[in-house]
Length: 81
Image 1 (cartoon, rainbow, N blue to C red):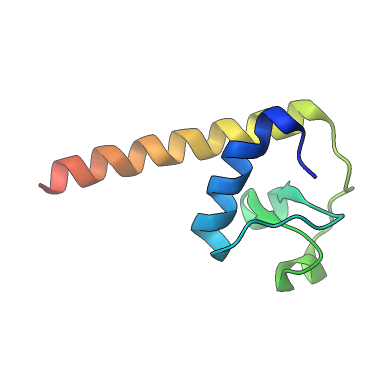
Image 2 (image 1 turned 30 degrees about the vertical axis):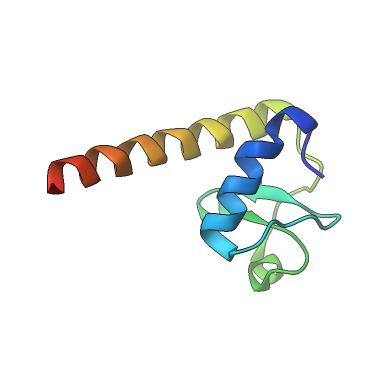
């Protein structure tokens, strides 16, 4: 499970990528998959080389990457109007 204060961002990322919130034992943002949120229920876990249980600094960086991506998509949607 994600640290509690990351849960809203984790939920949002999971819903966008998988259509459901991942809550398995091996949940993490996977750098092998461009910081895609994955757990053991995802097919991507087969090719994941991560050490699950990475530190909070890693989760902070991955969360910031998602925040940036969402902002970029908002700018692109606005420009397309």
